[in-house]
Amino acid sequence: MRFEKLGLAVLTDDTTASSRFYTDHFGFTQVADLGWYVSLHHPEHPAYVLDFVQRGHESMPAGFRTQDTAGLCLAFLVEDAAAEETALRAAGVRITEPLRDEPWGQRRFNVESPEGMLIEVLQTIDPDPKWLAEHMG
Image (tube, rainbow, N blue to C red; front, top):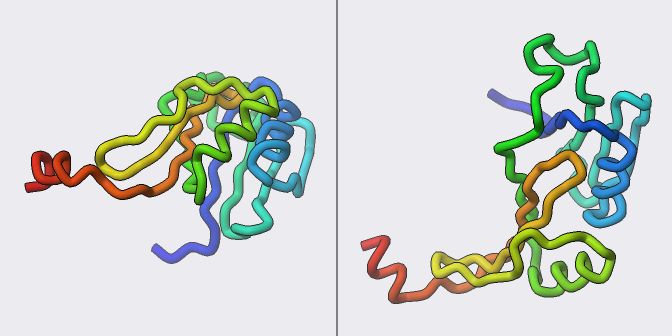
């Protein structure tokens, strides 16, 4: 399959709160707002689209309309996870898992979005050689 963009449509109880969270803290720009539907794009990554649909709206398949937004993790790879955690804390975003270094080569932390999605902010770091030898060998 060949496609031009990667989009994620997420059910939410409050399209305004979801839109504000991603524009204020992750640099997205709102490009459409129909009230029940909001579309965000990122100016540095134009092929990535993040949409929010009001939970229960008829545009979604009937069996999907009222599902909780769960079991989904949206990850942002950044240059400096520690600096991003500091900035999000200062902005009042609740950190659900604090910054930590993983032996497989990630420095990461987690926040939860207004619609209940887990967001992982991570950077690549050097893996622990001992861990690699034990687990990749």
